[in-house]
Amino acid sequence: MRLIRFQAKKEPPQYGWINNDNIGRIDGSPFGEFQRSETTFHLESVQLLAPVLPGKIICVGRNYAEHIKETNAEIPTTPLLFLKPPSSVIGSLQTIFLPPQSQQVDHEAELAVVIGKRGRWIQPDEVSSYIYGYTVGNDVTARDLQRKDGQWTRSKGFDTFCPLGPWIETEFNPSDAMITCHVNDELRQMASTRDMIFHIDQLIVYASSIMTLDPGDIIMTGTPAGISPLRPGDVVEVAIEGIGKLRNTVAVENH
Image (cartoon, rainbow, N blue to C red):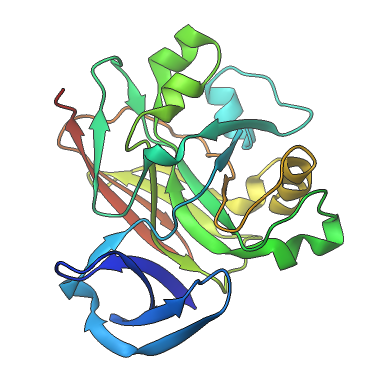
């Protein structure tokens, strides 16, 4: 099933499911009991929103060897975790705003895992039962501030710095899926999820040994090599084979 959040005309945001380009409502919580209604909307007639409103966004740094090389960093011996605030989330077709505090904002194409139920100290053989599905993410980063600060809260935490979407795919095999990022139709990043240093089961086991994972939480699994700056007017498109394409425009933030 492909789960979306959408807004039709002046109605409040709501969850739905999508079949081809047709959308039906979901009555109830997608993370609990719900019913699917018949398809009554067409994709082009609604505004897609971020497919989930996470309570927390757990990100993984330096999880692809080639990306580690391009940043002259060391390979971590355990997953390198950090958090992005929920206020950084936007959906597909929404705008990434470049903040005035930064002179270099980069894209980072990533596979995002959506947690389906509450868990702590999750065991390796239990991981699959805690995964609701997967979506496409972009861990937008103010690279100059990341280098300057030494820790990553500011550089990763600006509003609009966590595009997610276009939907959650509940039937997806993450073992060997291609991730690409194009900026203005130019290929910038391309790698397979099989190239992760720490794979999804390891990330969930590790993260849940630190903090409770709740339904709707997001785990961003790291970016491959090819990060590059975004400029005003750019169109950045992150695609994951078997899920879909996350497309965002880039503009300067007015303040």
